[in-house]
Amino acid sequence: MAGNITFTMIKPDAVKAGNIGNVLAMVNNAGFRIKAMKYTKLSAEKAGEFYAVHKERPFYGELVEFMSSGPIVAAVLEKDNAVEDYRKLIGATNPAEAADGTIRKLYATSIGENAVHGADSDENALIEANFHFAGTEMF
Ligand code: CMP
Image (cartoon, rainbow, N blue to C red):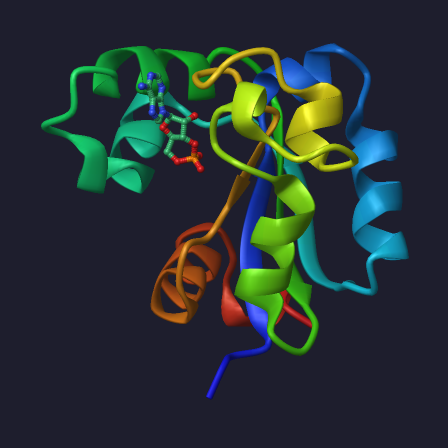
């Protein structure tokens, strides 16, 4: 059965471009409830730990550098079928391939600087939520 939470980050490019409000409005209009949220900045060490699964990929260094280059918004979102529905809302990883009306189509500039992160499974959504938030910070 599909879980009802997902984890997202509004990445440094979208924050820098002033799109926090636009992204959150789309999240809200798509029916997600915010369970937890923080405006923060990842250290290179924390970003590296978060994306450790990509450690062997050629883009890992670039990804860690970018994700620690400026503030982000981290959030846990709740909705039936949250992971799949959120991935539909954000669109393909590469904005060139993202469907019209998706967050990445509207606000991302490249595969590396792609505006938002979305968890790719129920299991990872939980791991990622717990990476960023204590139990007492989720409501
Ligand atoms: P995200 O959903 O946050 O998960 C892993 C990230 O790695 C992904 O979004 C992209 O931003 C980044 N990524 C994936 N493929 C590439 C690539 N070929 N070049 C640079 N960054 C990439």
